[in-house]
Every structure is written in structure tokens, then in C-alpha cells.
Image (cartoon, rainbow, N blue to C red; front, side, top):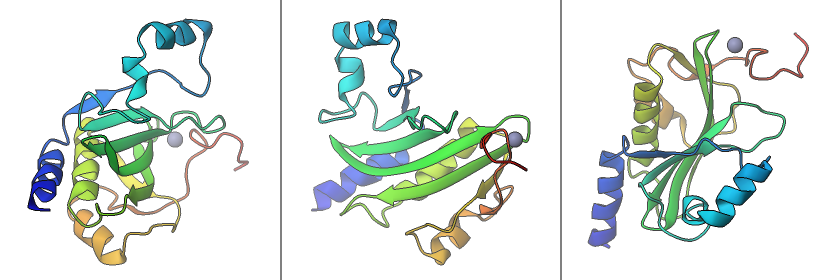
Amino acid sequence: MAEKETAIHAVAQHADHVHWVRERPDKPTWRERFRRWVYPELYRFDETSTPPSPWVDRPAGHYEREGWRIRAAYVGSDLAFQIEYVVCEPCEIGWVESPYSSEGYTRCGLASAALRSLRHDYPGVQWHTAGGHFREAKPFWNSVSVNVPGGYTQRERCHHVEPWRTQ
Ligand SMILES: [Zn+2]
């Protein structure tokens, strides 16, 4: 058990070690299909094996939601935590939603490490949430939003990231 805690702690400490996936797994072109066939190890981490970094940042794969990404933490080959986000450059706003901790990985610092790392990767943007569908308690958001521009307060998403919505 202590070993597992040490492993989780190490992952939280290395939230800047991110493996970025640029491809769109939902709409693979023939070229991507070919790459997947030739380099299966680049794609396999999603399923069962250990990812190349403890943290993975990949397209969320929503057809209708261009630009959404998932930042996920793996402890060994276990998906421990993930959160969806999108950053709108024209508005300089980042939205986060649906943070999810797997069983046995709640309240161990991964969520706040993920948010900190995202703020580092996208400097100069305000951070907000759009919905109230958070499993994490209010004290969690109060603690992670200290000194954060935007403070993860609730705000309607702009038309850049939700183009089908009439405004
Ligand atoms: Zn926008």
C-alpha cells in the first residue's frame, strides 16, 4: 500500500512529464491508420499497457467538440485520473470539466497536479468551468483556485468552442 502511495506521489510530482498526442483518434485518415498499423506502440497506451509518460494529453475525440482534449495520469498502466479541457485562444479562456479519479486514486493530489500543469502549459488564460457536474467537492475547487486567474468559476462557453450553439 505504501508503495502505491509512493508511486502516486511520484506521478503527481511529475505532472510536467506529458506525452502529447496530436492525432485525432476519432477521425483517422488513411495515413494515421497506416501509422497505427506500423507503430502500434504509439497508440496502445490508451488501452492496456504503460504509457510512455505518467501523463498523457490527447484529443478528447468528440466529433462535435473540436479542440477538446483530455489530460490523464497513469500510475503504471492504471488510468488514475483524467480531466477534459479546451482552451480558446481568441478569448484567452481555458475550460475544464469532468475531472475523474479512478477508484483508489481519489484525494491524492493528482487533480491539483493536473490543473497546475495545464496552467503552466497554457499561460495567460483565465480558467473556468461550464457545468456543475463535478464529483469533487466544493472545498476541492476552493483549494485549487487560489490565485488562479478566473478561479475555475462557472461561465458559459464562448461560440469558438461550442460552434453549434446560437448566441
Ligand atoms: Zn472563444
